Image 1: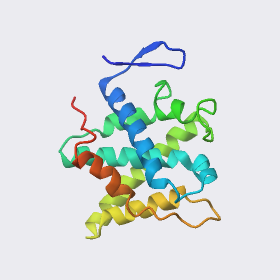
Image 2: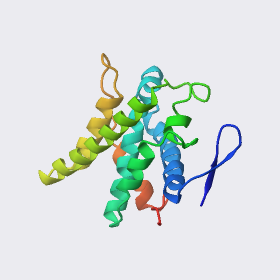
Image 3: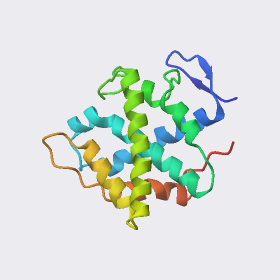
Amino acid sequence: MPFIFDEFGQKKEVTESTFYLTGVVDHLFDDMLEILGGRIKVSVFRQNWYQLVPFILFVIRLAHARAQKDIDNEIQLYISDPNNPEGYMNKFNNPEYTSLKEYETLWLAETVGRTYGAYWDLFNESRAKGGDPSFAINEQLGQKLAAENDEQPNLHDAFNFLESKFLKGEVTLFQA
């Protein structure tokens, strides 16, 4: 089994899927900062950072589904795991480590889980109507990242940007 180091340098044994998801979410989170640069106010991003996590997890699930691999159970476990020292709950939700707003762990897991499911539903609804699902997904992400009194950022290329990481082989699929 692979392991991850906690904030004190102690090894923590994790499942292979947790190791995979932790690394990919971290990598794609950083990559998404490129897309967001100049499109969203820093203060708004620091408040709404957690909205990127379900979007990234949705793209990971879709890439696997297109290869006829199911990773949804592993994603559900990742979403709700507060013990993964490098998982989004501990890495991004740590005010000592980042300048991002900290949220209560249970609320964060429920919100990320609910939003992740909503992306999957939105994708399937849009596809069933014959529309381009990427448009609806990008629109939803823009709404989630916008501040209440702010204009919605134009994120028309966010979905294709992340999806291309899998299509080009920059990010590999999980091999159980």
